[in-house]
Amino acid sequence: MATDDENTPTPLTVLLLGWADGSPAHVAKYQVLYPAATKFFVHSSRIWQVGVTAERLAGQGRSKDIVDFLRPLGHLGRSIDDPLAPTPRKLLVHLFSNGGVQTLATLMATLDMEQLQLLGLSGLIIDSAPTPTAQRRVWEGALLFTMPLGLPEPLASVARVAMFANLLVMGTASRVMSFGRPVMNVNRDMLIKHPSLARIPVLFLYSGGDEFIHAEDVEWVMQKMAEYRVSVAASSYGAIPTEPVSVSRHTGGLYERLLVAPPAAPKAVADLFARSEHSDSNAAGTLALAPVSGVRFPADSPHVQHYRKYPNVYRSAVSGFVAKL
Image 1 (cartoon, rainbow, N blue to C red):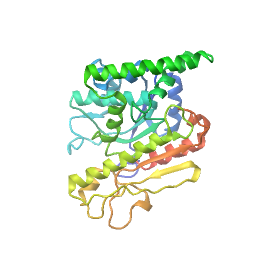
Image 2: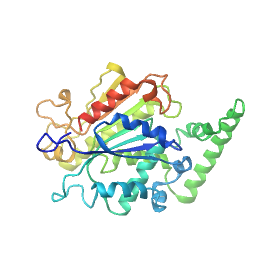
Image 3: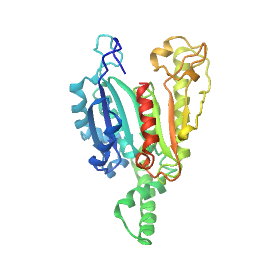
Image 4: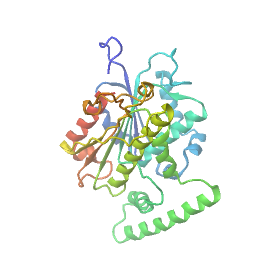
């Protein structure tokens, strides 16, 4: 990360958006992954907020502390492409679980309401998230809500079943009364389609043994995100539609998907999307879109515990991702 003279490092700001009811001290330990960062902000949502719409939380001012942190650093502006605006610091968002997704959704809703853009946003890391649809993961929601109770078996099983039924009833009633879509579905679409996010590289960190966020769900979201980015390039610039090109590596558990724009796409595509620095995706005549990549940890790595279980792999994935921003 460097400025135009290639000597002065570009300042880095990192938002660490923790899991629901996560201890700030536990979330803050991830600061050690970013030795080049000069500004950090640690935020954890409350567990009840996960089921509330981002627009409602934004209206309640739930993102005010984050906005107040970003404003003096030059990360907020009216236009992301303003040629007269000074070059901002680089901004990286590292979020955890659906609580972190909800915090990001609330922040984006707040900025949309105020007609502001995130300036300098360069990358997004998603750890143990997202839940792609409310219908597919109601049971995981029951696990999530009952886990903090710490009940012994068989009381824990009874509580999970009761919460499962309660979530089904509440979700159905909410949709009937508000004519709205489930929060999980809306937040998933925010990650995939929000204009500020669709142009930056994204790294998913997940595992095959997460009882709350299933690996196949994360990979489904990765695929949809890749497809959306290619479709935007095709529709915006008249390029020939194509499927995302998938390049996989399995060294150290790394699973990476790289996006390659159609060969006929004009150069303007590169101005909309960040150029990938991966040599195996930059074949002659192609323009690389912002990559969607992921590290799938082994099945013994629990929910939001991947750094604790596999610190070297986790650290390597994060540092490699940041080095390409």
